[in-house]
Length: 224
Image: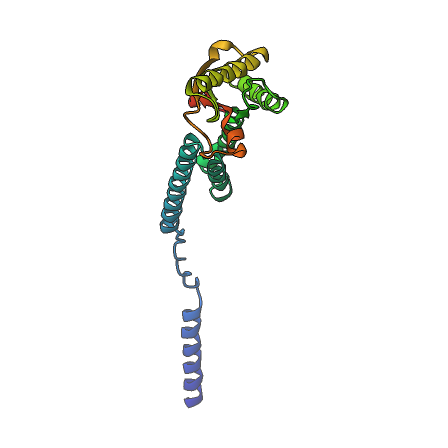
């Protein structure tokens, strides 16, 4: 009887174990929902601020270059435009720097002086080359208007040098017109000996002072 009781107990335990392990397995735990990482707005904001700063700095650089150009400091203007290209690529200033450099080159050519022999208003071979280069640029910018200034060195009377300066200005104008440029684009004026380029009394200074200068009356007409 005792053995039968033992076997009965074992059978009962087995049944209970089978009941516990049988049937459907317990459900799998629910997976945690996937969360997407939000854009790093701090980095985006910093990049935007950096872009605005670069545009502002580049714009200031172009403004300085244009001011230098207006003041006649062409080398400085060219350096500033080139700096905009190299340091601020992709900015509005860098995109227009190439045309700024072209404008500098055009203005340099237009404003290049021509010089004369002592007491003469004849266009020398060297002056002719300068005027021919000048005419090529002026054909590219047909709305540019020029005042040709005639100058003389200090030797001779004020009245004589005033007349000599005018002859030089008019000879220069005539040469440009003969190259096919419209006469109404030009005006002439003489300053005689009143505005020396070099304030000295020697042959080197006199050679620099007997000249024709070219004033661009409407700089805005040069827009490459």
